[in-house]
Length: 137
Image (cartoon, rainbow, N blue to C red; front, side):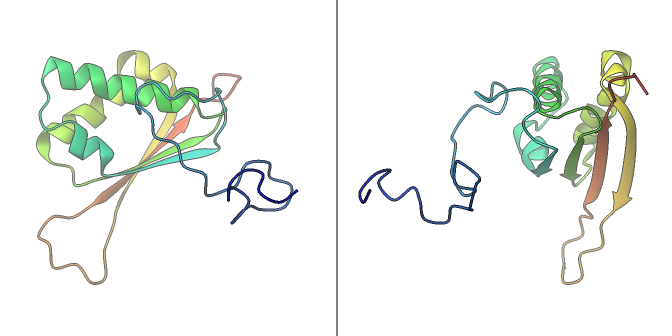
């Protein structure tokens, strides 16, 4: 009937249930969503903006962000991280390839991005973390 959902039907894809453009405001370290919900996740500057040093608190929060992201990805899902690779951010990203994190991510690919119209002296990089599959490989 008319009036149900108060406008939530606009932009809704057929057969998708919730509209594809629905919004959620939540703490990125504790998302109220079920595990394995997304096939991929994209971070375009969040990691760089949230952690402006490599202090113990930033290291712990960075690890929490990666753990929470991994929780929402299925086996073989990918986490795409765009970073300007400032020294502290690079150290935080590097920790994801070591110790416990190595049991979560099966591979890491790094690509230099070449923005066509950028006049910035900073060059962004794309880090692609692939979640380890069910069989561990």
